[in-house]
Image 1 (cartoon, rainbow, N blue to C red):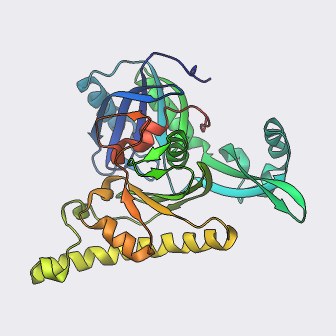
Image 2 (image 1 turned 90 degrees about the vertical axis):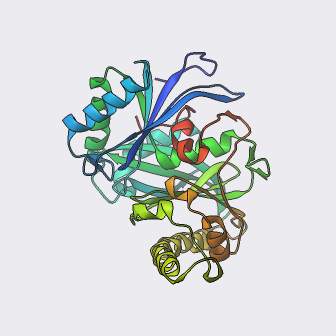
Length: 336
């Protein structure tokens, strides 16, 4: 089930995170996305971890209370989830019409996934066309979400009186949003190779897009301490000894994540020798840390900027926080 491209009705999109639930209410069409409401619902520790609802009753109560407080209508809703348990695989098939890809995968899915496909809801996303030994091939991304994860989220939304239309993987949501927009921060075009880095407390998601088409998606399961939100990356000239110690500790935590991101970059560069990454786009909770753009720019030796503005998104909130939820309003591919 999908919405029409020119549906004038507002739709709800909810992104689930361990520390907070992010909600937007908006409308999507080919010309723009209009968001008329956005808010977050704090999640008590232990209720939601790595895409798993740990206590359905308490989690439902928290979400119900937050939606009621913000006067959200009980209509159609898109969910956005992320987890290190989501399986992502890039595969290569003979070039066929897009509608034939599903038929091929139905017969050969167990060859491409390292687990029993019966326990997963698998969505495929056509990527680019490449030439291999003189023959055109189709790159395809498989996104496998554990069935229990899909079912619990859909049941949660239905029990709240909402009408779930689809669940999206966070990496797919941001890729759609970048492809949909023409310019980023009023400076960068979307037709370059962009690494989208979602810096969150529980994990970091990395998606590389080339001309708006996703090439690689990875979830880095490495937690960032909540204290990062309030502590800038200071230089020795800007701080006293205690501040230096704090900043140094934070750099150490980020260094692990940056090193893992760099490993993915190197893998991408070895595979795509003619498509160098030209921009690192930072978003998520920890994109707000003072000095993070300079730190990452220095580390990767390329422009690293926080996501602030997209030309086709009419939104006056914090785009770096709500990007995934807004991207899910674009109906192209979903998990369901």
